[in-house]
Image 1: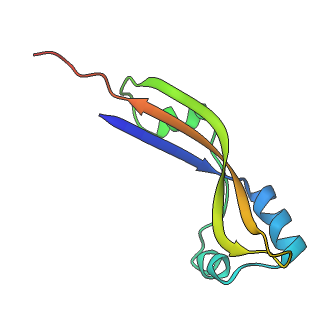
Image 2: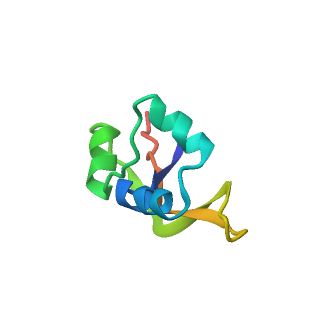
Amino acid sequence: MLLHVVVRGSAAQVGDLVERYGAPPALTRVLATGVRPGSIDRHEVFTLLGARQFTVLTEFDTAIHTTYHLPTGERAQEPAYLMALMVPRTLP
């Protein structure tokens, strides 16, 4: 089984975007539900996924290109971290 984990930008990064350009309508709706932006680190990924043993196939920093257009005309990019994990098969 292959699992991809994407950890999106931190609250500080989202806050910086909102401070400079204002909150996009979609973000405003999400924040109204009580969900807050944030990030988890590599260790927390394994903690959240439980005690299973995973093989890390790859991991790297990247950016998510959002659908939100900044006043500059560019699309907002949100820093992210990607990790591809594999659950080793157990032989019978």
